[in-house]
Amino acid sequence: MTSPDSVLLCVAAERDLPALRAVLADLPADQYGQVYVETASETVHAIPAPERMAVSWLLRRDGEEVGARAAVAVRTWSAEWMHDAGHDSLMPRLVWIGRSVRAVAGGALPRCGCGGEHPESHEAALSGEGDAR
Image (tube, rainbow, N blue to C red):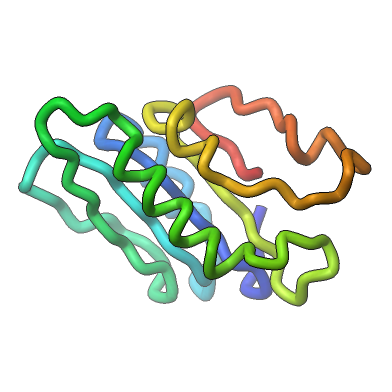
């Protein structure tokens, strides 16, 4: 799924933690990337992840839609890591989005601007608990 030559973004809510933990456990030890976990609880627990994967917890306010904080984080991350959004980038970028935040946060990702040359990449079946995109 990944390699040290790629950067990985993982986005989840508290209900996605079992799937997220499974994804992180399967990564190479030298994987590089960012993990965002959106939660309504101020209590957070350590999530085992490769050393080069930063884990950030996003506190959702009362009444906020699940995924709203994650969407802001995804847009901010995308502005830094996907600014060219081209296919000739030196560092491939992979994204895993948990089921709980997919509807809101998934829409925050930019598209590559390829003009539809490879729709299967954009319309990846997001089945199961979360998938790389």
